Amino acid sequence: QVQLVESGGGLVQPGGSLRLSCAASGSIRSINRMGWYRQAPGKQRDLVATITSEGNTNYADSVKGRFTISRDNAKNTVYLQMNSLKPEDTAVYYCNARMTVVGRPEWYLYWGQGTQVTVSS
Image (cartoon, rainbow, N blue to C red; front, side):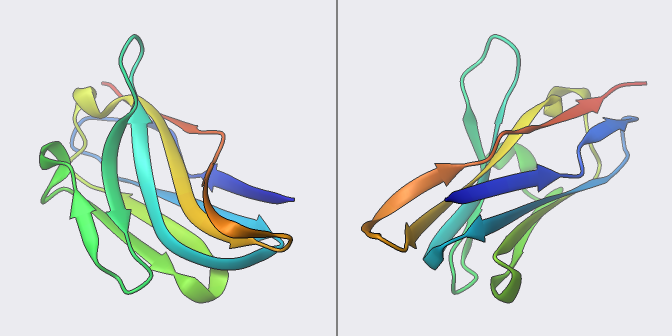
């Protein structure tokens, strides 16, 4: 069984910072792309940032220059450093990872359970 577990969410004032972590565990064979998405109440789930196993990154325009995605391949963990947070960043943040696992050779996209980020004064 494979799971992704996010941590680091919470309540922060506008202009503040948070760092999210997402660790993949289980019978993992290989991970290529990992990413963060977010979903605000009543809205669709949108891309925040992605990172490949080689370290190539991609960001939504709304977070460029404020958020940084990184990963530790040895720990199967992806991070999201969020600075200069705004109220419109409030959402549930989900991580995902495209992985192959023992007994299942094809690539499959796995999701975490989400962590709440609230930006408010």
